[in-house]
Image: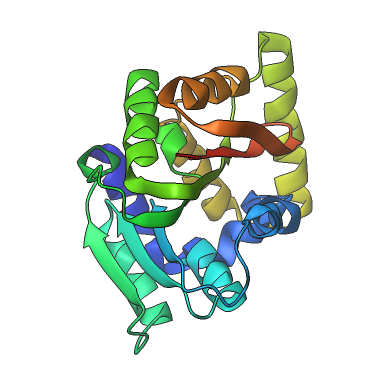
Length: 225
């Protein structure tokens, strides 16, 4: 699978380039933490899909020190970085798997993902949202920090131009930028409006988008019953 190989290749430098490649890094990831509805000392069970190096999971673990986290990813090299990050932490477990193998049993209070689900075809996104809904306990929440496609080609060109300007202003190396652009060729971004509709169709309540900056969005919903 090409996407797995691409992420295997960049695993050791992935975190180094995050703030340059995600120009709205603080607001983007910070929004995820701000909308989590649980008390900071709650012993919640968290699933991160496409956890990569564990970057977002580490932020959640810091904010919720009693939380147990289960991290999944298709890249063994990326998960190896996550295991180093959480070495000695018995509250973190791992699984090498793709999103289609998510077990749809209600065992999680929170499902999160960052910059991963946009690699799926639209039909697979819809199927995954249904599985996520079933994987949540009543009162649980799904938060996805990801990418969305513009409704118009003109705006999509603007998204691309703005991203390149922002990234180059961050003084990223040419090789890192070239690798990022190669990974982006595998992107299958969907409209934000479609993704919100698919969440509603899957059964989620309180579906909303809490953050949007060009192609970067943070959205999700709750499982009430």
